[in-house]
Image 1 (cartoon, rainbow, N blue to C red):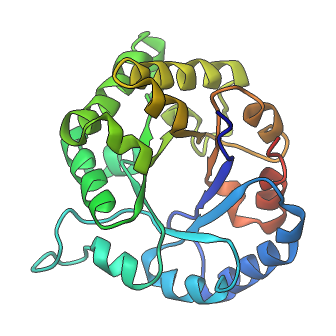
Image 2 (cartoon, rainbow, N blue to C red):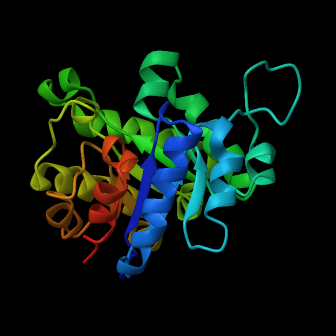
Amino acid sequence: MARQILVAGNWKMNGSKDSINSLIDGIKAGLGSVDKAAVAVCPPYIYISEVTGLVDGTDIGVGGQNLSTEASGAFTGEISADMLNDFGCKYAIVGHSERRSLYGEDDALVANKYAVARAKGLTPILCVGETLEERESGITEEVVARQLDAVIALEGVAALVDGVIAYEPVWAIGTGMTATPEQAQDVHAFIRARIAESDAVVADKVQILYGGSVKGSNAAELFAKDDIDGGLIGGASLDAEDFLAICRSAP
């Protein structure tokens, strides 16, 4: 089946009120030239209200970069799914490699976050991927399968239809290194085949994004691959023209 390309910008801990206003203005100004890709942005929590106001009336979706497994209570510094919903979010990134490596989020916690986001009507963007050491050790598929299987074990394979998967080789995030389109496609094909072992219909439907130094110069070649359904964009999402160039690369 034909899956729509999704281009989601993960701004990470970047931005100010002025820069975000300018960035969204630039994206909105060029949105008319984006006719095939769905577009989303994931700002830092404190700017979500600002961004949802700025994109009101457009087709730009907004997401959180993380969320708590808890609904409310004494969890200082955390943000719940209900809070994201309250400010008009559509997406929530779960299991980003920086959350896994810097903040110790394991597969079980990430699966729980996926479940909470899904239960609250948010579309979870589940990040999976291997480190350089893991790739060089030849265990990329083992690592990705483990991360994916944690969600399937908790939620069932059908739950993946309600989310998006983002394959992000950790060694290609913010390093300027990029997996070749063939390397990326190989892992995307593995992910789809892994899901197909449980349910071929779900495997065919689920969007699998690539996240690893995607730029306007390489997006078209990546998005042309059979199993790459868009991108989770880091640095390039902070520049309107760079981000729009990626969005325009949808085949």
